[in-house]
Structure formats: structure tokens, C-alpha cells
Length: 349
Image (cartoon, rainbow, N blue to C red):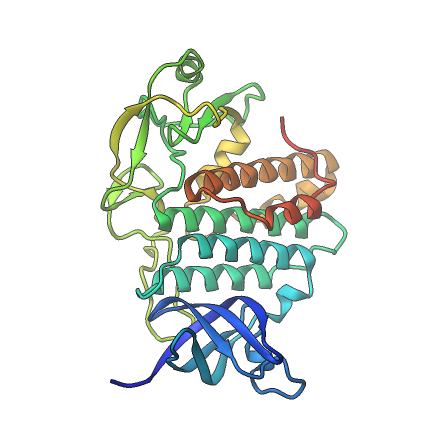
């Protein structure tokens, strides 16, 4: 049996090991999540120094060890230097890396997760600097982060249901012309809920909870198995689960759920969303984010609108963050830095 194997992987986390080595946590397409030693990576002139950096994609030759495998060769295929030059982008990328670590499996191919994560890192890096000063750039980072989180939750099968009411299954159409329009949201129930049903939850009514089954649910609420939140594989000539060219929505939440009745967890509070917030959530399942440039002129002319849109995106991100922490049962440490990056943005009520 060969003592070496090849893999293409992206570095998610690194830590010092011994006098000059570095211990890397790498998401690979072929073998899933692995922990490998980069020998001598912390030496000044080490060839593995730059290749062991955060979010660097390498083609690796790895030798098996008794307890830890060791990198013997590495050739860089992709890197994202622009992420480290912008605090908001770097924080958003670390946030996504935490989610990937929550759902990545070891000893199993993880090509879909690998491609999806790389695609969203590329999108974040291509954004304008968040320090541009007009608020639009940081607004874009927040919006792209929210979509990336939604796509990762969809791939894991735990994205919230936002197209229909979780209880009645009636389609939801936000009225953007009505400032008083509201819809409920409850993570234990699986997503959005009509306000009338939300009041019943407050009275201790039993609510349906989703359990994952085969298949996917499209953004329009129809069943299908071809729309996955995966875009182009940037390191091969193939396309993996590409969204249809017609612009049809990609998988919004893991589909086909059994309905199981149980008491709502008291630790999961219900929320209310306005029309803008629900509309943004419903757009997140699309392969591409809605064109933020369409709002640029209006946002630049009206500072209130800028703050309102930013506040809506911030609330959307916090809802998705709570969903991730609820389903993965662990906190997202980078989320505190996201709050710091957007501290000046008012929180939507």
C-alpha cells in the first residue's frame, strides 16, 4: 500500500507545532477535512511558508504518518491575498471557514463544499475595499457574507424556509410598499411563520420541526434534485452542480422534510421580519446576489436609505448566524468581529 497520496485542498486553520513546523487543517476535495504537518513552514526561507498561509489552495503530496500526516510537496494553485488587506473581508472569510469546519467531514470527498467555499472567497476578494468611505463597500461585504452563509446552510440541509410559512405552507410575498408589513421567524419551526401562527407558538402550541431527508427544495418551494448551491470548480475544467442558465434559484434549504411535532424550545425566541428583510432572505438562494449597484445612486443620495439597507442586511446576517449556531450547536467566534466591523450600522428593530 502506498505511503503517500495526493490532494487539492485549501488551508482553513493553522497553528505552530514544535520549533519550526505548522499544523494545518485543510479542506480537500478528495479526502474531506485533514490535519497535516507542514515541516519547517515557520522557518524564514521555507518553501512551505507561503503555501501554509490561510486560504491558500495547494496541490499536495502527503506522506502518511503514525499520528499525523506530513506534507512532502506543495504547489499553490490559488490564493486570496486581497482578503488579508481588508479587515471586513478577512473577518467574513474566517466566519465562513468556521462554518465549513462545522460541516466538513473527514475521510470523505467534499468537492461540493470545497467548490462552494472557494467561490465565495473569490467573490469577497473581488469586492471593493470596505474602507472606501461611502458605506457601499462594507454593505457589499455584509450582503455577500449573508448569501455565503445561506448557501453553506443549504448545502448542509439546514437553511431556513423563507418562501412559505412553515406551519401553513402558504407562499409568502413581502409588501415592500407597506412599512408595517411583518412576518414571524422561528428557528425551531424551521423559518418563516405567519404572525397569527406565531401567536399560537407563544401560547405553547406544538410546532412542526424539520428533519433532513433526501432531495433539495428550490427557492420557489418546489422539489428538485438538480439545483445545488455549487458554482464553477475553479481548479478543473468541469462544472459541479452548476445552477441552470435560466437563472433558476439554487437550493434554498435541504428539501423534503418529515413533519415532527414537538414542543418549541424555550431557548429559541421568535422574531419578526419586515418586508425588506424577508425579501433579502428570499433572494439569498439565488446563484448570484441581487445587483447591489442598482441601489448605488439611491443610497448615495439618501443616507437614511443607506443605513436602512445596511441595518436590514445586518439583521439578515444575525438571523442566519443564529440558525447556524442553533443547528451546528456551537458558537461562531468570528461573529464578534463582524459586529465590531459594522458597529456603526444601526440594528433593525
